[in-house]
Length: 114
Image (cartoon, rainbow, N blue to C red; front, side):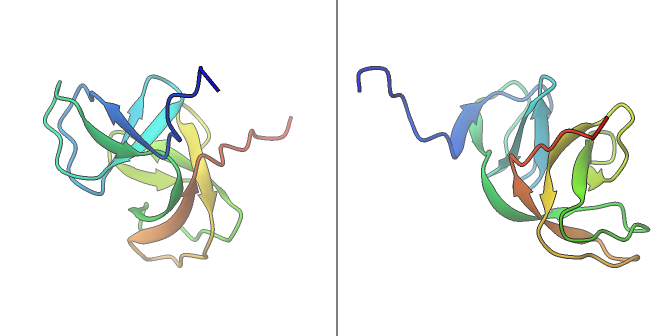
């Protein structure tokens, strides 16, 4: 196929702020990736956009398998708050309250039912 570019699991992207290895970044309003290495602000770096990862979460929050997870760009963690945050994936393992991380499948941005 002439128009195939790449698989897309890892993308070279340029964040507007520094991102530490293993931390996420939301590009625009819908493209989320986790830095594979430390990436300086305004410098191109590699970001994983698909797969299952252990990611920081709001500690005082219980999460169940299948919960939608939303990116809190201020605190650089996920939570279940739908207001002013973007869904970046779905929990694939339960996480207790308190706990600092959860397993997330990226790219499973399931819309909230209306």
